[in-house]
Image: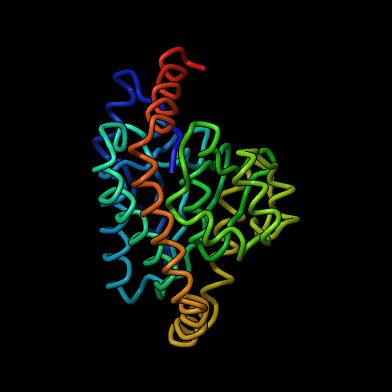
Length: 268
């Protein structure tokens, strides 16, 4: 979830095509294309990603996906305008994100994120759902929900402990801190670091390594990870959304959202 402001005609233009789709051999290249909003995930972008995943999965010639972000940042998280109208919006938005991320994890495709700039909250959760993460040396990662009176509901409390360990995951979520890409690599969140001008090449190289095995073998191997501890994992994901639904009725949630938009309006 979270963190992106919204303003200007340029940002409105982002919404016309929230996802840019290209093809390069047996790889699909998806670029989150709302740079004026730091590629925040709104319902249209979530739907575009779901549709793109369906199209890629039904094309046997496509083996992998490169997931990139346009502009300075990878993804700032869920667009708060989709949640700002009240608790009743939590379930449809977060169910959509949960479905998308679980489909990533269970897909026959190799999905590799290329991260530059900020990966925050839902952007971090999006990266966690990918099979590998390549990051520039200047990229940063963080959950950030608690800094704005919000709670994670896109999988942070379910996926982070499995990726970086319980104590590190608790610290990252509860402190709302950010970490460098170097630290993220040391903790096991990032697969490979690269210079900023090498992100595309490094992401492609990692993706091609993942699709080197035959398709059936890759699919079976990945499915073992996708179903690991499924029951408790699904319960953890459901608990996040249920808790956020309840929290979205609180004063803390309303104050946090208002504070965030006040900062966004000031450009801070």
